[in-house]
Amino acid sequence: MIDGKKVLFSGMQATGNLTLGNYLGALKNWITLSDEYECFYSVVDMHSITVRQDPAVLRKRARNLLTLYIAAGLDPKKNCIYYQSHASGHAELAWILNCFTYMGELNRMTQFKDKSAKHADNINAGLFTYPVLMAADILLYQADVVPVGVDQMQHLELTRNIAERFNNIYGDVFTVPEAYIGKVGAKIMSLQDPTKKMSKSDENPNGSIYLMDDPDTIMRKCKRAVTDSEACIRYTDQQPGLKNLIDIYSACSGCTPQETVKAFEGKGYGDFKAAVGEAVISVLKPLQEEFDRLSKDKAYIDGIIKDNAEKANYFSAKTLRKVQRKVGFPDRIR
Ligand code: TRP
Image 1 (spheres, protein in one colour):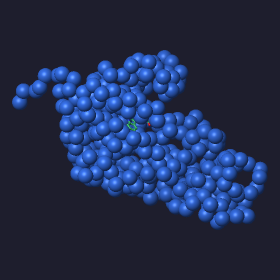
Image 2 (spheres, helix red, strand yellow):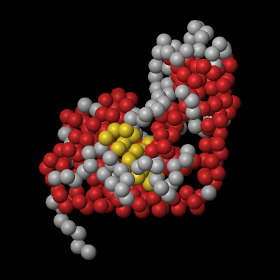
Image 3 (tube, protein in one colour):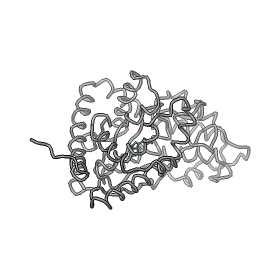
Image 4 (cartoon, protein in one colour):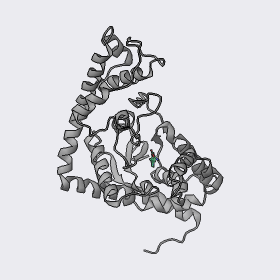
């Protein structure tokens, strides 16, 4: 609890370009949650180097992502929007938690298996202990809730196990966090393969709408989206491409899928796809304009980075000192 509010932690990696799926599925919910919780939204740049990165590109992308959090509507005065690497407690707690995590547990992580298959030439120890750093992120702020996608549930479960294990030995040190699965849960699928999640690492750029796509590109991608030959606008799993477009339209225009179906009853797919394109543009255009405006205001963003790094360090140091005492590190002499 901070000031009577429950604590929320979440983070995103600054690798790849964020998609409409990241926005509708995650970022947009973060904004809703920011009234109810004391929120820490991190740009998890330390996780990013588990895969080789071009330093200049990573730095630029990290700043863009941080700016995007704000452009999307997260108030940086209320929410702690910061770089993971600016709060050294993440690395320090991760080390300690490494000593409370079993090889066997980490070996079972499906993301580790997937990533080591994908980066077979660089299966480094950081990739293996990635989930422990994630546990440190969460436990460092005593987070009560963590909004995550299903792909991160296994990591969150591990976090809970580590926290409980630690608490069993040392008493109530960590809050055991709960997953927060979005109520609206707009899970956006690829426009080219509606059985796959829309992903920033998709090789086919037509499958994803990127947050920085211009209106023509958005419209083109929507018009080319894979549908079916039923020629009937219905919201059913039998028409996954169309269902996805209905979800996108609904999330962008703030109505239910049923209302969307009703509004387009009897219309052709061509008309509907154009309407989807318009709806997406109407959401992304203001976001892009705000992003451009903020990006130009270097002093403002720098100020946010500085203030929130201090805030993150303040709260993380509290937990860290407690943990260090518990495990037996000597007190500091002041
Ligand atoms: N691993 C998460 C992802 O790839 C990002 C992340 C890092 C995270 N630390 C976190 C998410 C803590 C939630 C809480 O999506």
